[in-house]
Length: 373
Ligand SMILES: Cc1ncc(COP(=O)(O)O)c(C=O)c1O
Image 1 (tube, helix red, strand yellow):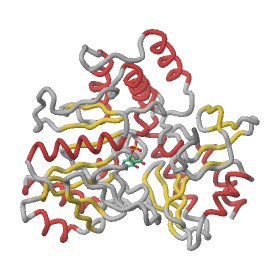
Image 2 (cartoon, helix red, strand yellow):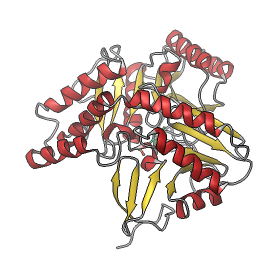
Image 3 (cartoon, helix red, strand yellow):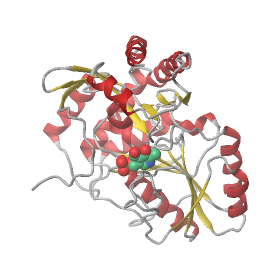
Image 4 (cartoon, rainbow, N blue to C red):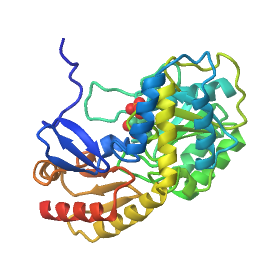
């Protein structure tokens, strides 16, 4: 059997990772400004993380959601405290798409409506709220399973308001910071007004913090810069530092009942142990503060590089927009300078490094980028 060929691949095989570095099978070291697509939060193979997972693998990897799992309880308590959502409830999933699917389901169970509002160039995984995210004409959007999706430009409060006031919208789903859409930050005033209109019209506000959450923005969640409290918040990626886990943070207005939601693997013992270790490390090593400090430094320095048209971002979620395609710059960074970066569209480099990236590593990246430019 061959692999179903859906991913364009770099000709590199990564075998090992430590902190903000990865190593290929020839032992070549790479500086990781990509974090495996915003997944590596506390750093590759963090010793505490490895120790906790190894210990749990030897005891129990999985049992079903039909028995008490103390790790789920501990994870919910710690996540509530660290994120500022102690009064919310947690439903655990395996991925970001699954978290968003469950959030959309919860919203429509709650108010019985079917229509969803999302934003142009948003991405919510391969879900009912998916948007056309590539230029591949075979990928059409939305992938509809009964929910009707209407798209508005980001920050278009007038358009969204007009639609919400008709009273037939189930939920608005919005990314804390648009990732694939090019690191676009919703304006604070827009989010505040959106939250108010949602409340006034009985619409559920879902903030997708799958890429922008888990301390990447310099706050636990990016929407906390605007001081809003969404009804549902979805998380994944950095939550397990590479071990697959996701979740929905659910406001106390939602009532749970047995069978309402469910999953086989979501919240399994090993995934929860991974997620608890991540929260412990984020706290002990002050990584939210590090993301803010190193991110601010990087953005300040990047803004002084004349070849870059625009630098956007918060914390360690940074987009560098050029006037021309970035493919060659990224290839030179990777193959010559041994630096992993991400991209979105043709002209934007995306930086999503581990949140433990040091100031020295940030300086090293700047040197390497300048050398390439
Ligand atoms: C904002 C956002 N939402 C949802 C997803 C989907 O997550 P997953 O790939 O874990 O299904 C992604 C993945 O890139 C994402 O960036």
